[in-house]
Length: 155
Image (cartoon, rainbow, N blue to C red; front, side, top):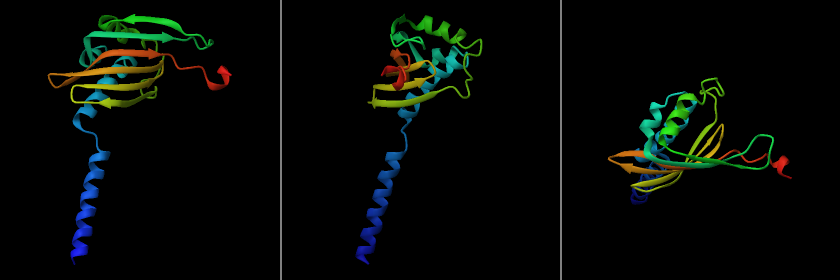
């Protein structure tokens, strides 16, 4: 009987740990929501989502590569207002279908006040630094690049 109680207790403890491991905490959900607002704000022409998810002190910098080239070009620096304006215009001509456009979000690291995340989107890969202020996660920095050339192109 003692073995059975011990076995049930161990199983319950293990199951509890497994449930904690597989579920996301509220901060992880909020971090992913901030990145989703960023990408979906651009895809869906909803700049108000940029206001919700991006800090006004934003610094965005990156590297752009034309599809027919292996060489990257300086994509320049962008501030909050420029990103807001981009979200209001980037997909006006239906460049992508917001429902099917690529948007893979991964949290790379998460602490109680800071986090880093990665987004794979239609235009390339964005890396984010986020900060939690007054209970809200906001994007502070973005470093991005166009998708790398396909493996067969780079050989």
